Image 1 (tube, helix red, strand yellow):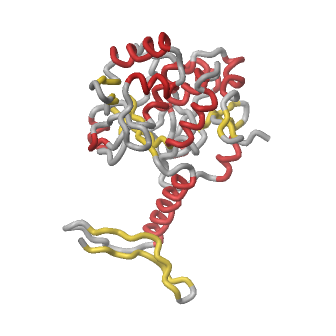
Image 2 (cartoon, rainbow, N blue to C red; image 1 turned 135 degrees about the horizontal axis):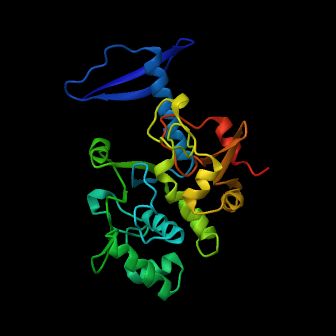
Length: 289
């Protein structure tokens, strides 16, 4: 393979923005300012992910489908626990097994201890996962279904053909949130992070009705009443519920007021899919003061 350094001259010194590996048969027709901006944005996005924990998994979900409306038995509390244990999967080439950070496989007893819930609660939760083919007990280890979570390289075209989409989910923030709220009454609010996935615009991180739309001007945000219905809350309680969960002094769910309508956003320190770093104006939505 041939490598090509793409950069610009800055005061007589070459500034390398990206090293492109040219596969056999590929070539770069022309290096343009647009190409360079794309590479700068991509690098900044990678740096953002590294600054917010680095390691991530892919959360897989049906496009624009409400999890509750799809007939699942899982509650918001269950989704919070599922999202947390998914951060312990191995790379797909190792079988999507659940393992501790040192590589030791996690068995059922270990999983209950990791979640910090009682045996009866764990038994009920685990049976739900088994009945929906989300989790598989292999005896000395446990495996998560790749249609729910993956780690490593994914094939976007393959997922799209199967009506699936995906979100880069940062591991460290999810664990931090669960360790803070997983054993409290706020665990259900934490589960809303997974319920929200099919409605997140990865151009803006807002909850919208058309999440796959790439043109920002054509994106249709969900209003607060629609978000309340989606999450199973009344309109007068939804704001309070979303404000209950914080990550390192920031809100997990943020709000922006445009005219008379409030738009709900997901903190990009948890999910971030766009090929650039978040705008500063977006980050302001999650400040607590």
